Amino acid sequence: QLQFVESGGDLVQPGGSLRLSCTASGFNLHYYKIGWFRQAPGKEREGILCLGGSGGRAYYADSVKDRFTISVDNRKNTMYLQMNSLKPEDAGVYYCGAEISSQSPKATCLRGGVKDLEVWGQGTRVTVSS
Image (tube, rainbow, N blue to C red):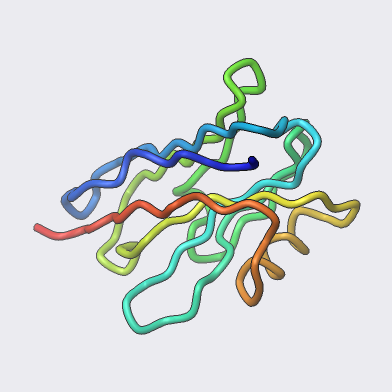
């Protein structure tokens, strides 16, 4: 069974930092396109950062550039989302996702915003408020 276990969501003040993690089981992240997606209240799910599981150039949505970073530790089969300089508009439920794809990480981010990928995490809530 392919699955992710997510953790790290929390309440954080504006300007603060938070790190989310997703540990994969049943599959090897190295061979997948991976990404982080978020769904803000009342909005559609959007792909914010995506990366090849073996590394390479990441795709960043404009809204998170220079503040968020995606990374993967293949030894732990775990992916991370480091979020800095958090803003109230960053609040929402964050999901990790993965798919087998020969296309770019950007394609994974765009696709995961409108349809299901092969594997999803259960979601973790991030609240940004003072």
